Length: 178
Image (cartoon, rainbow, N blue to C red; front, side, top):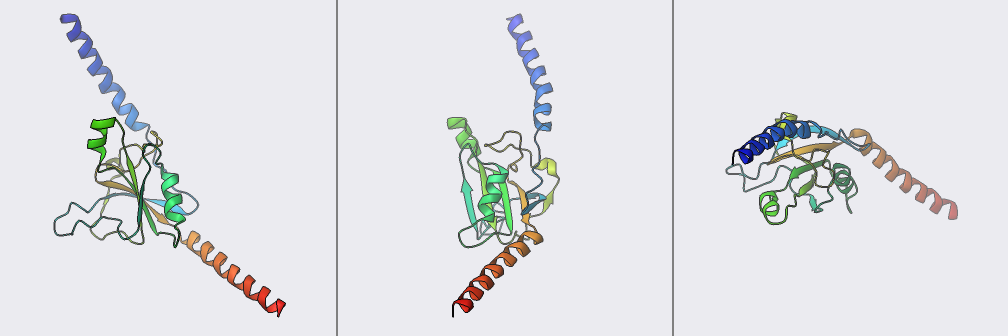
């Protein structure tokens, strides 16, 4: 019995030493060519009198169980079928508690929107402290916290230039054929 108590105490001490090291290894993905990291923001759907509106609403969302990473989310939000979304955000799943208890799985959610709710405020980056389920070394938000990325002005300009370039090239080709 005493030996079991000592082993349990040693296990707890080791866990106390290792847990902060594991958390310290999580990296914030700073962004891509299109999106830049804006910070850690709170989710708004639990705030009273908001009709459960999310911080990033009116856009698209995606959950890829076991596979979500920041680059996948940014790619999803930046290549929508009909538009590029201004904001992309990842948060640890609202289903986390239930799925972890049932399957051991953890889910990261990706949200895309043209705006971020005015009720969502920036928190210290340490509040976004949970790993992506597709890359355990990368931060994917936190409990009711979003790691938020914003489409850079340069990416919008490049997309607009490409679109107009395509239109002008097609118009020129049509004119030459006449």
